[in-house]
Length: 262
Image (cartoon, rainbow, N blue to C red):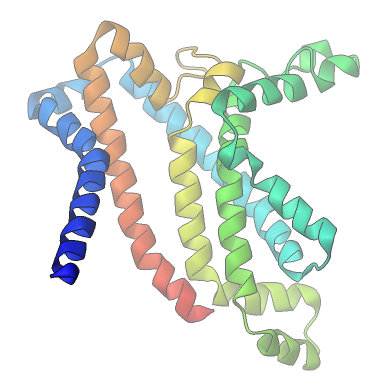
């Protein structure tokens, strides 16, 4: 009797949370008819915003992978308090409010930030396409770095030691052993990072603005359309949601192969 009551309570609690999390998504899909999804493709906001989102998020992803992979490798080999503090600090953008991220980026790269203090007022990156890339990288890179860290730490030390004992250089150990064995987990981290970059809104709005064809990404186009044409905003939201769901399904396929390789 007690067990049945406990099972009923846990199922009820789970059902409430499932409804809370999935209910709004279902409402979004139900409220957006197929005709809206078809018509939105010709809306003037959509083409430039989609092109800019894909361009900037892919550049951001490339920067993150090229710079974040060796960083994660170094941190996975490092020991000591400073390495732990650096790893913790690198996760701050994930939990930082978007407004704080936007202010931080403005102070670092805006007209009154580091370039201005060094006498390069015209070198400000704020409200440019480059600012979009920086904002996306700032909020999404920690997700990839953390995934790469976890993947590298799961590698068997004996494998790396054997490779070094056979005369492999540190670079060959990294490219020939560590990367192939961690490929699945790294790919999953990259997909998660890309999804986060595509969905970035708050920091981009504050640091890059909402300029059509220059800094207006798909999330910003949704924000703009919501004021004038809610149907377009709904259709774009459904499109982004479906894309994110597809990436999550991809993550589920990639993650197990990453664990097996490790």
